[in-house]
Image 1: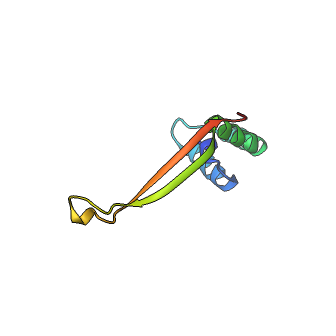
Image 2 (image 1 turned 45 degrees about the horizontal axis):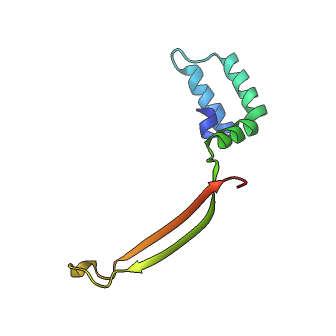
Image 3 (image 1 turned 90 degrees about the horizontal axis):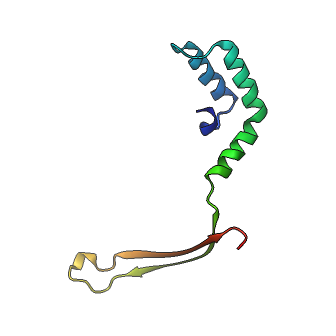
Length: 94
């Protein structure tokens, strides 16, 4: 929860306080150790989570256009814009 929310120090303190008050939660000593660990390693943990969730693909090219329909069976659909997007993805470094 701490890592996925990328908690700042105030959020961390509130979260750990709630965890110590919860039935079957953590002790205040455990909360202190978690807080110290998070303060020391927050940046590394956050970067690791971002790298794990990032796609290997990169956007190589993108084309788009907006079309307007000028003839249809139903008059209320005339001049309805339609966006067409074409994206080309590829592996990093290729």
